[in-house]
Length: 415
Image (tube, rainbow, N blue to C red):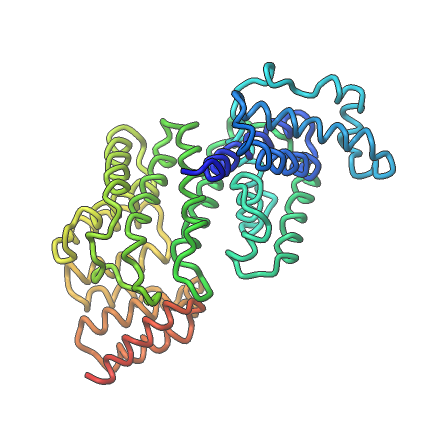
């Protein structure tokens, strides 16, 4: 690993901790984030040549705090921007309070920062964007590229999210004990959405966005380090590892999608699978059962089959039925229909799938047509399958998925 890449990885890890430390002291999301970005830039320029300091976290916090102090002291003409800070702390007090490398506690406020970025006053897209910016360390341009929107649009979304948090009167502190479980559920859901968008992009030319899956895994790993006894946090980490382990086998050299049953399993990441299986095995034995643990258990069953035909579909169906009874939603039903078809035949799967036709949440969703096409093909109804594949292809906004669905329809037309 080069010096530059080592520094880049360390800065990505320490950025949210430095931001959290400043927010705990000074509030003002924008001002604190600007100061941290300046400190990160200084570190990126100095550390590769001068060496990484003994206390890199303290170095970043100290430099960022001094940048923030200088901004407040020298910018009286824009005092309105710093109104909240000025009301809480005078510039003189800021100078006194600027943290020292040797005095800065090693407390990690990443969890508190995650709770703030996933504040209930924000919409889900804003929660995702702010989490990736403040906790993930991605630039606004990177986030905009991942979600296929102009950088200016994403900048406005992030700016509005910060303003909404300020208007809501949110403080940089853990939520009250009686709210933490629900807020943690939101945090996990946001990280789950980030991972899903990276694993199967909703639109665009690429099936996967590795920068999003990697970032989601990193953030959940950090969260699991902070909350090692939480079964759902561990379950989500296991789910991500077990799912992402298949990434290399999911596309051909030309970018075409390869379905699970046809993947070259020798290309799966054995180390990630081993870690994921160990995590889910341990947490299932001691923690209260939850949906992420169940999904991780399903992923483990898939990953432990050396060949597609060795998959234990009965166990998968039992797990999906348990998941449906505890956390019902259309996507669970969709996947359960596939498992049911594999165990009891395509007619049973199609019957269950029909219950989703009246579900408004699935109206126009390409996955419903895609699964129906698969089951119709299993049942030998090739004309219906071809029609459903084409309907799914029209509805998806993902280029690799559209190519795959069109290929399936064309293959049936030539049979």
